[in-house]
Amino acid sequence: MPLYLYDNWERHLRPFQAIRNDWVGLYCCGPTVYDYAHIGNLRTYLFEDILRRTLEFNGYTVRHIVNITDVGHLVSDADEGEDKMERGSRKSGKSAWEIADYYSAVFKNDLTTLNMLEPTLWCKATEHIAEQIAFIQVLEEKGYTYANSDGIYFDTNKQDDYGYLARLNREGLNAGSRVALGEKKSITDFALWKFSPADSARQMEWESPWGSGFPGWHIECSAMSAKYLEPWFDIHCGGEDHIAIHHSNEIAQNQACHGTRLANFWLHGYFLQLDASKMSKSSGDFLRLQTLIDRGIDPLAYRYLCLTAHYRSQLQFSWDALSAAQTALGRLRESYLALPNGGECDGTYLERFTHEINQDLNLPRAIALMWELLKSELSAPNKKATLKRFDSVFGLDLARWQPAAAAEVPADIQALAAERQQYRQDKSWAAADEVRSQLKARGYEVEDTANGWLIKTI
Ligand SMILES: Nc1ncnc2c1ncn2[C@@H]1O[C@H](COP(=O)(O)OP(=O)(O)OP(=O)(O)O)[C@@H](O)[C@H]1O
Ligand SMILES: [Zn+2]
Image (cartoon, rainbow, N blue to C red; front, side, top):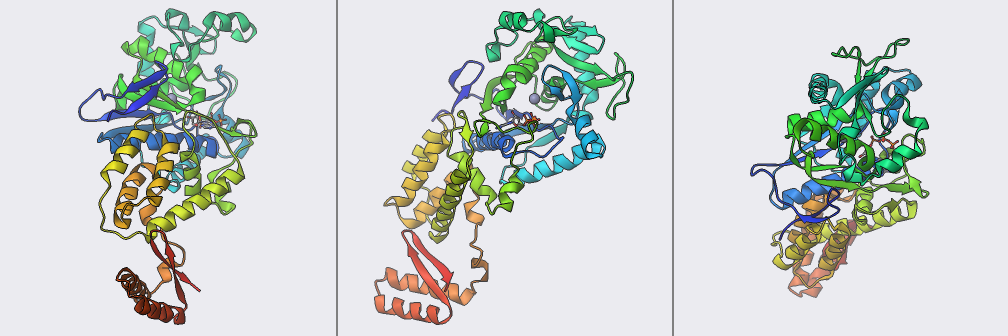
């Protein structure tokens, strides 16, 4: 069954075919580590995690690269204003290096808490300055750059199809924005290298053929994806806000340097909205994963919530929806736990599941199918085996979940519960009731569910 993905370059579903035989290259733009990630950012990484799991489900080996932007992302996407890292440093009183380390570690921890798979490789912008300088030098040799008083810029007029990914109307943009042009030749031109200001020292700066300074934000992704994947690889991801500027600029750089548009497929995760606008670090109005945990929400309930919305539609955050997700996850975990082991994955359900996830990651329908499976006539052990296979894509970690009290249920009680279950299966009702009384006397009760049993304390 082919895997169809919605490619934003072509703006339609395309059957996925790997470029190479040995691995699939997946590059995901990582966080700018000047602050905590919010659950909106995390929604995009969850979508990328699901994509990776779907590729692996389809038998591919994925080389999954995530970068850490620890320099060069300016407050304004028009390459103006302060570097977000330096601003974060000024606000916190810590060095830019310290805050980069701190927020990178918290970010990685958030991903683990949400049961995301560890990328094959993390790479930091500040550890790839030489690669970025070398990339800019090629652009310079090929005539794509110009210098002005604050940096080396990419001349977007040199490319007829600049901005194709975003279907940009360049004439319209240029006409409407003369004031913001500054020293740039065209409003879409962007910085490759920024000079350190003459009057104040920066914490993060390096020598270069053009003088002391730091790289622009977009060049790191072109340089690092070429280094760790290839200049032409399979799939590039990010949030929807990256389409118009960041990814358009990455493509421009690669077209100029390597003659490729970086990636064969361009996939974007759509926003988590808070009160009808994008949840955003810069606005200061955001929720962290830890905020949810502090309010008694299981982090995987947030993962479940994200699974119920398609990645290509925006998701409106609400506490009600989150608590409904928590309830559903609880039911799912209990059902899974109650099912006996030893079954086999059901071929028909597996085929239907593959059809849903291979249709551009239709996780909402895959989740609905999972509930249908639980209610089905399938044998209990086979339900469990099938569900386990589904969970390799959902990533809800069902097999590891234990109710808080379960760890304390003594082995002899568990054995009694199993004995009772056996009596019930044999229709020896009197013996089953007798064991039930014994359990009760010890302070336990067994709850029968559609799919098995659960031991609870009275
Ligand atoms: N509200 C959101 N919902 C989903 N993804 C988002 C949201 N906001 C940002 N993203 C994505 O999260 C990833 C990390 O973004 P990054 O750390 O650069 O955020 P940022 O641009 O500095 O912060 P912000 O835009 O929140 O002020 C990117 O892929 C970005 O597109
Ligand atoms: Zn990027």
